Figure 1 (cartoon, helix red, strand yellow):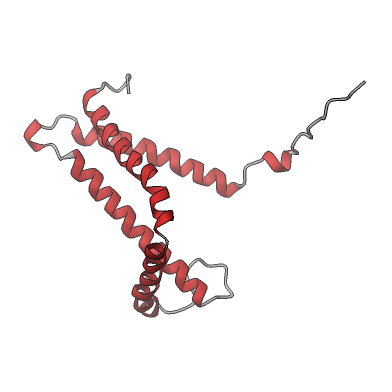
Figure 2: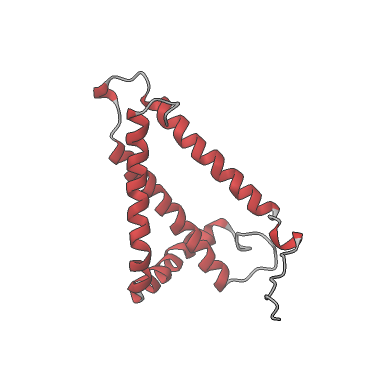
Length: 149
């Protein structure tokens, strides 16, 4: 008689979420709700000629995200070059020094990206789909009633 292999159940410690993960989840929920509510509020009761262009809004939003990512990547590269003893995300240095090191840190990251275009090509389809999703989101906000949305 053969016995079937059993899989061990994960412990409560392995399946529990960390406070950081719960905070990130909460922030994502708040952000998504805010996008929908502010998007609907900004388009409600406005004449057609006064409404903003959805394409411009999405492009500006993505440009702001790109700027924030470049800053965070630059800070991360500076931290790698100048390790600090503190638990702070920012390196232990004056702000003017951080700002002067930023262009070289960002340039280093851009050269890494250009040296390995396969990675960039791998994330291009999801990025294009996300851009399409954002355009469709605002189109739906414009044309659907609140309960349907």
